[in-house]
Length: 194
Length: 395
Image 1 (cartoon, rainbow over the protein chains, first blue to last red):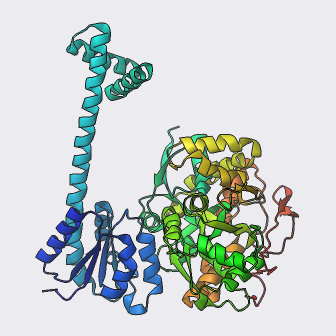
Image 2: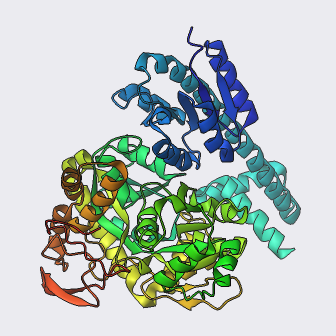
Image 3: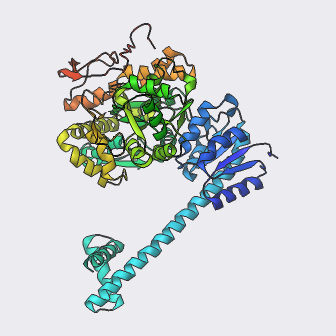
């Protein structure tokens, strides 16, 4: 078992943080700390003295972590990002999953790899769920706008719902635009004229 | 001819203007480039994206490519500087409480006096001073140290420099986490508006011609793609030349505000481009000439002597061998590629790749490909001259 590794997870989203911790615990790493507030990074790094720090690639506070890794003493210095930059495959996997990891110098590569693999798998799952959620939200909001545009056309031109949609689609095709764009323009124009 | 897609990473700061103008006014398209600007959440993320080939070019802090090439911080990677994107453009500011303490010592803010200001900071007696910069490998940090540590009786242990992402600088000042900061626009002006901060000096008062942002590319990639590098240099050179003309400033502000790349309102873009800086809430703007320079005085030229200056600071910080660091740094600043790129369009380019830094008190004619061109001024606040050819360099 690898319970002796100290892992620090920086993640604002509570659900996501829980999932990552669960995944790490399942993998056999017991010493996992989560911080949700980036302001706590400095204190947590000094206090916990982690072997590995996992943080979202897109987190703006990475620059602060970067600085800490340069100024703290040698033992605390997480100099390498990802496992080892010679491991191209692992690095690409981490980047595409949106994960960055700071690893204390001198920690053996084979010990870091399983931790990262677990985290990468979990990050991927989240990225996928997020994009599905975004797509669903977008579809829902698009449908609302198109329904409003149809309603406007039905009232203004006294046509059926199906005819209203056909008209929207024909206009969109004629102008080389998307149905949602035409619908949005119509709704905005109607709001302005009210 | 089909345009070639190239991706350039950037951080949403006013000084990425040459990139946005190159794209929006189609200077890149004229060079056969389909330029995509890829916004990055942090300098670390931008560095990683460049090192792992996810982006082709990057808008970088001038010390970053040298630090990466020297293997400092994060991923070691050979990065070349193809050109300088902007000269100066940063501001140094203090918190409301430090400003009050400085005024109690009899100091008056003129936004132009490095000596009186550093004396007042010392006299205010707050130690250690917590100072925020955007990144450890930044000209911001280099200028601050160059300036403050020259003050008599001000010692390195009096200051503590920390990294704070620029959009958070104003909050950190308001919450009392920072006493001072050095940051690029618009974030200095935002700190004035939102946190009662006072701007005490433009970065240009420490060094009149410091390379602030550069265009970086992976060295291997640049060697394999010379035509793309040349096209990108020419596109940005033309964009920078357009941007520098005063009559274009209002339109430039409009384009920067409207294009979605910066996502900043026009009133925050205005101070940097017009040089009208509000140093304190409620005061009239102070006209600061050459606040940021995009083109004139060979601003885009990657001077190898500037690379040496940066290398010397990095060697001091990290106890590296000075001569070998300089050699690596000079090899990063590709004045050779820059010349090759601009030769076909007959641009005026300096003949030398080194110059004594800080030796020009005013506009000075030097020899160039078209005969001569005007450079300077480029003085350091204390009159120091950095001559990378000299056997012994004064600190």
